[in-house]
Picture 1 (cartoon, rainbow, N blue to C red):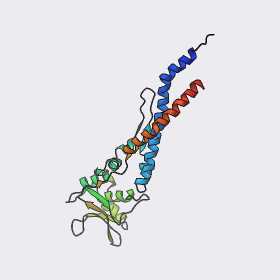
Picture 2 (cartoon, rainbow, N blue to C red):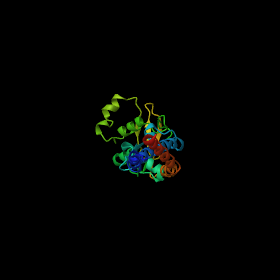
Picture 3 (cartoon, one colour):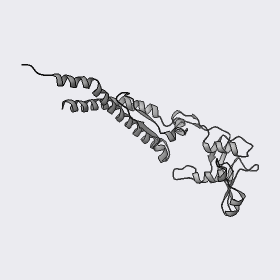
Picture 4 (cartoon, helix red, strand yellow):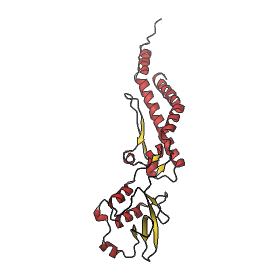
Length: 233
């Protein structure tokens, strides 16, 4: 008695090449999704009230059978922002865009390396300095990228009761101050000559490596079993 094993032989050949690559692609994509979820969960622990922008900073570039390579990376918009890199690696923090604008545009005799929100700063729901107030500061100090957005004498006359922001030349410590319409003055930010230095906090690479070692073999076993079931089940 003879048995035609050609369908089985063909199936094994496919499983040894194309199907194994497909199963590997499934496993890699599942692994990348695990790593992305892990870093998002970790940010909720190591950061104080992270913004949605921060929590959505990473994306998965899915693997393909021909490349067998998945990638977890920062999204295009957030990749240009340095704060996650500093939180990952530790070390000195580069100037923010806000700090660079004031360094270049403000008529201030001292060195501006960093600007730290003060007691009178308006904070948003995430504990960060309100972007609205920062824009007001840039406008009053005539440091907006778009010069037409800067405060003018005419606009100040139209809004007489609005608080004004200024940097004193003398008499007060280096900082950005707010003068209310009633004359009260409070500091909203401290101007510092020191470079902020961060400790390593995020641990993306370390945790991704540990997660890969712990789960990749299970993912591959599952996807190969799924492919076997598809071919022979």
